[in-house]
Image 1: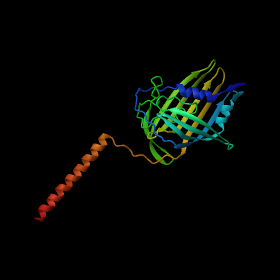
Image 2: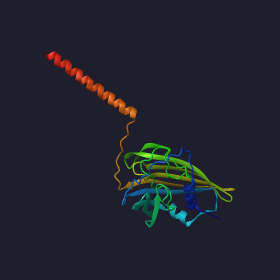
Image 3: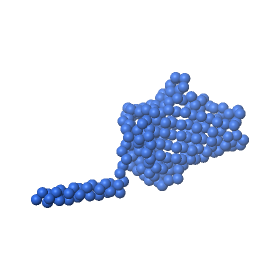
Image 4: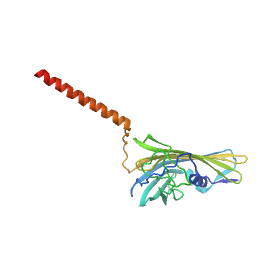
Length: 251
């Protein structure tokens, strides 16, 4: 009988996953306040061709999770401490105190990357550590909870090795740019053993928050701004010329 601890693999993978990106250090800022909360739908799934594979109790609990709610309790510098409420399909709930430092990336097991610095740009480090190259791939427009927001997106991959197996993982993250809160996360882990293969996946998506959540304006590029100014100037010139001609006709 094989006991698979996918929860521990998730923790290990999130610590070491890699991306190919330019290292850019950005000024980091916390984008949330004490009392802010975010709620996520949560799903987990397992597929394996191993006839005797078995999940650990931690994995079973994760598989039975229905939603998760993070409530910011304290903020000290760039360290966010929050209460994590986990609601299970049977109606039971558990609570724990988690933390994450948005600059160093240091966190509790369940705090990793739930919050990142606000207003990061493309190629900015998610964690300002030169040993962990986790950088924003792009800033895109996506709709969550009916509002279209500027979203910082990151894709990553990595591999961990066991005595007789290798686990290949991929991640996809979406964070709200203005606040740095996690909006969506997909993690896929595939463990290749000597004979069998086991795949595990978790998915979280924001479904509610008490943070002001409206569509963000699309920022104008310098070229667009100049074009608008030129058009306005031409309109004003046209109005001036028209008025001058009108006055001459009256004379």
